[in-house]
Length: 358
View 1 (cartoon, rainbow, N blue to C red):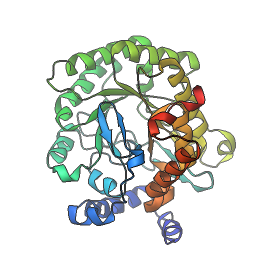
View 2: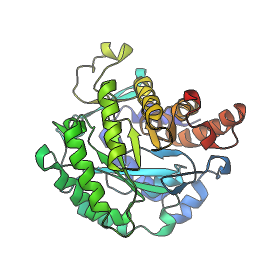
View 3: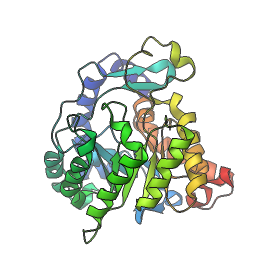
């Protein structure tokens, strides 16, 4: 009941300042004595196994919120079944100049051109190493990328450096080559670049005794043919999953007339839902059960999460939905998902995956 008023006050502040204020709050929530009291009750009906991992529920925090600060324990305390940290680059980088993050409240959207601002793989690894088992009641993923100054021809060196430093702490890894905010990065989604990059990453992981699953994150702006090709390369390379999708450079519907529409950067939130869900469905139709899909983009409610699942997502992620929904976002989405599964006669979440494609 208090969140709408609190959000109104917070939305008067610069978005990055609000994020900075949230970090100590989440650190406090993540302390075991507090987390045990705050964490919503478990929902056994939503437990799911994917990527060889057990997820307490299918709703994860998407990459971009925890930028390597490792505030994942606080996000787990709010009920997320998984948290994806990153994007992390080998070396620290400040990201793009400010302002670089904008809210579009009338569209329930966010526009950002952050540019992989993070403290680098070494610092992130040290923070992850300090976590105790009780700090990780859910699944912890790490999203990796290349530094802005690294040319595409040498990109694999950056991804391999991140794998080498971060794999001991990651339940899964995600190769991010679809952010619109690093110049030229999306070119790595083309067949030649993608084959070389994913091949190098899988080869490096194959040398480890217990390699974490590797996923690749794709853009919603690929043409249908380019998306099919990227998915085929993912299958051929042996990666274990696809994250669909990143933010969009499109300005769909009424967003096109917003005063911020001309700002460079990726759009997330409600206007992205249809694009991202269409990509999930196309990928699922192509891969079936051979590769799981994590659906992300426009997950604002239980209904939008369920649409992703019925389109083919084994798991879903949110970021913008949490910004607008606040502390009640996770329990409301999860309770709504339970109700929707029961309404449609599904005993398990897995039974609903891809239902709209059958």
